[in-house]
Amino acid sequence: MSAVSLNRCEQRIFDYLQAQPEERRHWQRKIQAAAREGLGANAVSRLEGELWRYYVERSAVAAPFRDAVRHEGLHRTSMRNLAELLVRLWTEPPPRPRPPTESGEA
Image (cartoon, rainbow, N blue to C red; front, side, top):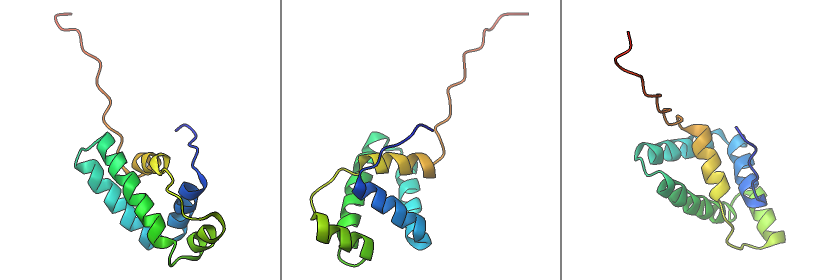
């Protein structure tokens, strides 16, 4: 997997999910459901918006987010890289296309 660059807000969510098993399971189910729906790029866009709403919600109650918002403010930030990373981490990779076989050879 190639390296992913997350902004501070994305990294904060990623670290929080790693430290909070219940929250992580919730997001794993949500991301896997979006992948099963087969929305492709639309799934990432939808998840990106949901991750931002999650950041805003957590900023009212969870210390790492609340402290960051106190110092940095709460400005809309892209969560696209995080959404793409979580989709890659928590879903099955799409099947690789099989190379065509040559027919008629003996």
